[in-house]
Length: 132
Length: 462
Image (tube, rainbow over all chains, first blue to last red):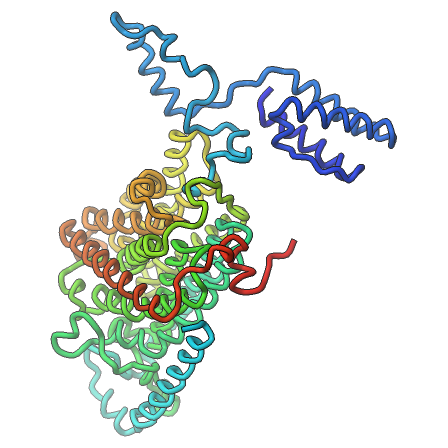
């Protein structure tokens, strides 16, 4: 499941919790931090049982299921995909470094690129040193 | 000097100048026989003068009045929304207040001295750099109903001079307001007003004379600038960059994210800019004719190409096309086509837009990092770079069949370079002069609280 889908569910739960219980939560943090999400889910179930809010309980179940799914890698810029494709044959050429060495940084977005959560999370690089 | 004393000084000077002017106008008002003699033998005008009212073109006059309203719409509310949406929530009202106040100040300065010094011929050698005093306080912009005579400019003999002066005023207003984007969220409101008033008279007015009055030295040299690529955009871009350096970066710049208040407002502002630019460029034909129609077409093509070009560059480089990128790109295309609008073909306009979109994207990102200035809303990156690109491309693509003149890249580079140098030096000087009267920057606590509450005691609603 992509991070933007998790954010959508978290945002819905955020709205319902606020409307029905007055509790304010952090949507972005909920979608990216499993511990925080688990605590919000526990709270939502508790409030659902206390107040008879079935929709709150259902949404908490949906978030729980979403958080259990592995994160789909964020979309990579076309320019980077092209440059990696160009570099790939060179990596297999005789005398070239093993491909694994190029992937030492691990999967996921590389430095300087923006995933959905990266752009919204506190401390993100978006809007630091410029708007564009 | 504190802000209140500064305001009082303004008003005393203004009142004194007004009294002197009213006296001068009473002496200059022409008597009917003198007017009749002056227009008895019509000849091509080399300076503003009176003509018979029936020699005017109703269509041209109507279009120019419409174009004037369109260009004013670009500033009020175009620029106010465009810039207001990009700053942080706590300084949105300050940006909007700056735009409204500058509109009023520049208007009165234009009425008092600006129009005359920019758009009338100067005397002697000084005429190449500055106009004359014949139209100070709009003196001589007469309409004599009894004799059916009306004042016209030698630059626009088919429309009333009052309309032409108002049209040019809207250009002075938007230029001053564009500069604001470079120093938002930290410049004191009183300093903004004083500095931009000085800048309009000492920088914008002479440059407009150099480029647009036939006696100006760049006009004589053959530099082409149909609607203000150098006068408006390069000028404002360089001034903004100098302001950004002089004021220093905002607190937290480079370490904290400065989230824009509402990019929806920015989009609404960009839309108004796009529509208003038809008045800006097609109005600069000063007639409702084929050249104006062509200017309108090339304006639209360049804006579209600029938006898509920036979008593509951003998509390739960062993985996602942003709304702010699209808005910035369309402005980049519009800026670039401005100097060439009445000189180039629609095919060339496509090139203007495509090149400007990529160049301005680099200007607002890569070049910005190189320059290390907190040019907050990328005035230089978009207007400076876009103006330079447009001025140079005008030298490449200007078509003799459209305008009767041919472009030269060298002359265009000389024109753009001269404006950049003059704007750089004078802006630095005027900032120093302003700092002698009032401190340029708000205090650290005020910056943290936001300029809305500190400078205006107002807050945005919830």
